[in-house]
Amino acid sequence: MQKLDKLLIKYILFIAVVVLFVLKYEEVFGWLGILWLIISPVVIGAVIAYILNILMVKFEHWYFPNVQNVFVKKSRRPISILLSMLIILLVIFLVFGLVVPQVVTVVATVIDNIPAMFAGIQEWSTDYERLFPEAAALMDQFDIDWAATVKNAVSFVNNLTTSILETTLSTVGSVASIIINLVLSIIVSIYMLMSKEKLAHQFDRMIKVYLKPRQYEKFQYVVSQFDESFRNYITGVVAEAFILGAMVTIGMWIFRFPYAAMIGALTGFFAIIPMLGAYFSAVIGALLIAVESPLQALVFLGFIVVVQQIENNIIYPKVVGGSIGLPGLFVLVAVTIGGGLMGIPGMIISVPLASALYKLLKNDVKQREKAKSFQTDKTDQTGDLEYIKQYIKDFKDQNMT
Image 1 (tube, helix red, strand yellow):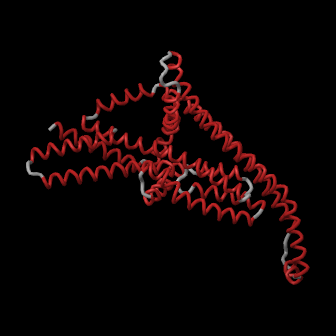
Image 2 (cartoon, rainbow, N blue to C red; image 1 turned 180 degrees about the vertical axis):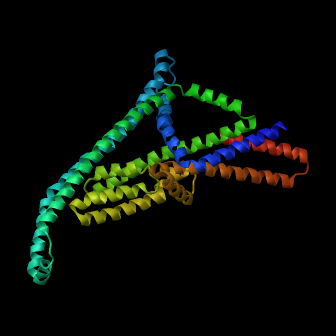
Image 3 (cartoon, rainbow, N blue to C red; image 1 turned 90 degrees about the vertical axis):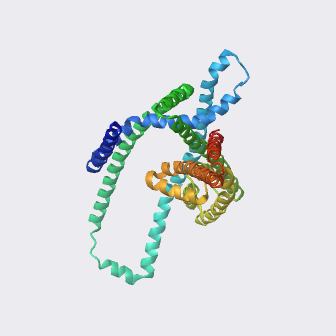
């Protein structure tokens, strides 16, 4: 009777939550947004800590691993964290250091060419009026108040300037808020990394207390699969980004394209976006090159298509595809769904997430097939059942390690 009462209470609470969400979904989403603003530094800090931990572990293995000196042991973790952060900051500054000055140069070139462009338009209009006098006479028949037109244009420019100024001030405020949250996230990530063993032990104790032994084993197995997928994906994507950026830079130098270093760095940076990142950098690079030579921009697009084919058919399957074990079709589906739900962040996290789910499903199917085959061929029910249990246990242990 008590079990039935508890079950009824659970269902009543679940139905109440669903009804509340349906009837008050705007308020619910509003509260969820406020909750996200509060906990976002912690969540982002955990993500930063997870990424830094990949580098930190490497540095800890390299930082005098066999020395038992007290100073070395105490300084191993802080120095490894510092080196990991410096490596990531160096890459970011390198990319922006190559991109921003070149973009400023292109914008300055466009601004310098504006007078020549207007002179060309004026010359074309004069030739047009001289070659086609009938069209000029037809235009004179329209009653156009040029003074009012100029006044409206000036008013439009003033309104546009005011709007740009307001947007800039709003953006400055948003950037200040982003910087504050980023600093808090970095602080949180450092604390997490400094005490990661203690936090992991406490979390493990809590999970072990609230879950049954079999549920605890399953939870550990699932977490290990997700950790393996995300870790392999991050390392694979970083390696692919360096390879792709170097290929584009060297190829552009060989074919004497302008902005080779900048576009190569941009290509490597956008490579973290699965499947679509190279196209983003290609469009940006073509627009920059088109300022100097439209014909060369078309040749550049052809060059990028060739590089993209090499990347899709050789580099990505070897470097990233092999590490995540996800077929190409599922990568496309994951990127499409992730991009539709969360934009670019969704595209990035959808691939390792789908990889982990794919591995879990594949292993579960194999396990059930083995269990069914043993049940079909069994002769002694008790002995075979024990054998199946032992096989499943060995299978889980093998995947967890």
